[in-house]
Length: 207
Image (tube, rainbow, N blue to C red; front, side):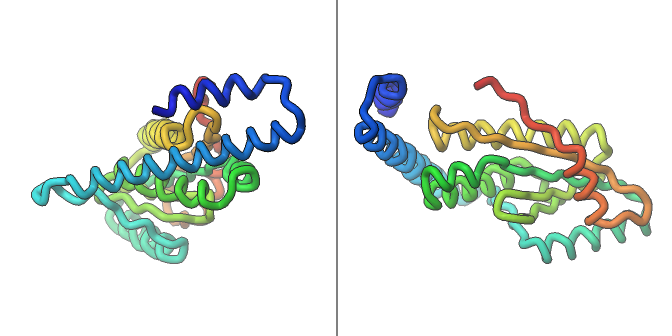
């Protein structure tokens, strides 16, 4: 249903419009994106309602930063005592502020719900998921070495990009960065996140 509208808005993008007409066109594009988001959210809710009772619940708690810090500290202490290894992923959606300023907070709120749901469906039960800032997320991966952590980071970033692209439609493109770090002995979360953020990689997806 949205394909003809997408073709129409794409054709108008290069049309010789007056300033007033271009303002109207931009407003219509914003309304189209919001409508698409609302339809996608309704479809997601219907899928949840249609889930059979015997199917396991896929949701994973999204912790606040203080709760995330506390749970990660507990897991790192466990690793230090028993010789385990854990890695942390840092994920940043770079262009949310730009999209918010152009299209409004409602679109970003829907995007963040989409991100939380997507992340929850991609991680193991033993992983720890936290929201560090409005556009930043952290994931602790117990029993995960550095090579595996980077592979997991790319997999998660790719799925996030696809989920947000499906939510927003073809005219908005998410910019997703991710980094990974494997903790050494006696290192804390702040060290790991700082290093993961320092080594950020931008997901390379065709435009």
